[in-house]
Length: 296
Image (cartoon, one colour):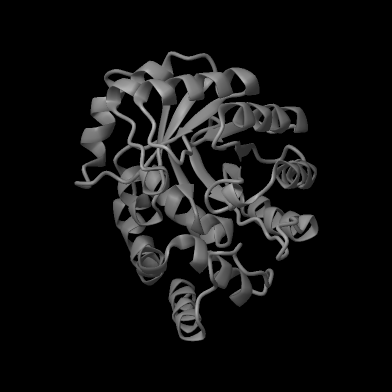
């Protein structure tokens, strides 16, 4: 496995109401992921609420993660920020603390041009000095990477992978063939959007950047292994078990659902950062039923 392949499990980042990271609880969550045998850990991604955290709290989270994981599993750290200089600093912080790779989304309040995103990504990749994965997440950034921009960025030193959104038409195989025809052979293409994991991996995607694996790593790993082995029947069977949970992810957003799962599994009892609100009791009951269905 390479750094940007296989199952990458993205953890929530437990904090108090003032935004201070609970490093002891974070360490427990990460230990659970490591023991399950995932291929990498994604820290401070969207599931980790990176946009809600100060630089100091991000540094504390990375330090705690590096100490907890202890090199047993590669650690990929999100370094997105509104300003390029801030993202450069975060990339340097993560590298200095011992991260193995970086993840970068083009955050912005003002819509960005392709040239602005190119220069932003290039600067942060240089500052971090680590393998960097482009985070193509138009659902939150409102920026869509064109094929031409991906190809151009793949030529930048340290930029080694892309985390793609689910294909709009479900044609993962066609998208992968199209992109790989223009990209270096060692440039990794993986997908986020958990409900498309089986399809993307069976079609030849290099990685599943998984939300649910942050709290249910063993179950997500079973799906990953089946799909990467080309066992379509088993992958589809496991994916069907996930369907009630995928439906809730789509309805409420996976971020909110993950906080409910953490409490239901008695892993931690923290609310998402405001202004995001926790799910209501009736909806939490639906999450419980979905988790129970998965484990039947």
